Image (cartoon, rainbow, N blue to C red; front, side, top):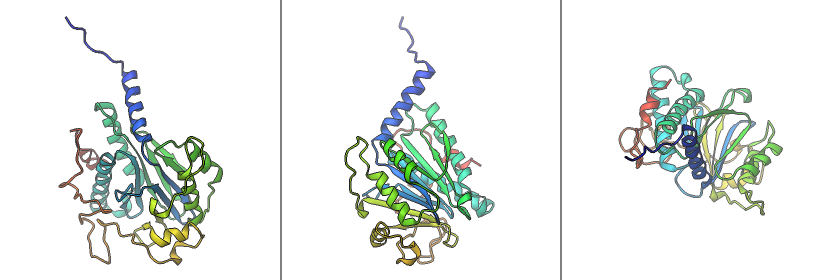
Length: 290
């Protein structure tokens, strides 16, 4: 008679957590930090698959880890925000509510599925002033942390966190904030000389509280190069291509339910990213969230 295989709950949770952390550490980092006009997102991401995206008028999303996993959650978040804004009011869509919905999904997957999500997420909302800005960090097990000022995730981040703790201050200009974020991303986790990151190796976006309604804007090209060398206000430079498909665009006439969002080919509810693990679709959890 064979003996049943048994693993204690403590050991099972520890093994899942170690597995998720190792997967996240293999990815490139993302830095999110507040500046005088809003919240900046900077990722070392030379490819076209985006880690930073607009979710709603005042809300943005950044993630590290397995792309197909956080892309599922990004699409689910957009559907959640669109449905809630349409059913109630646009002002009822908040980063706190979205973070709670994401936490439920991540916690359920971590405890009930054999393989946890290998991702970390930041959901940020820009307020009317710096005191009302919100930055939430969510980890693979559904834990939520309310961050103040800055957060760095992914990769080996101990030195980057130490740098941000020593140099970040309230009231940074956009140029200063981007320079600080790039310095944090360029650090060698093993203590070697910092790398040099060119503008074309970075993905940068901001939530700018001074923009009308839609606060999200992508920054790249010559504008990004100028900001990394000067403290010129972003409004003084030529406009970057900040169109985030899927919300109303005055140039193209796209409606809030248009398909292409942030360059990704999916349409929520039809061509979703592949789910090779065969687990339940996280969309169902978020759509029922509050």
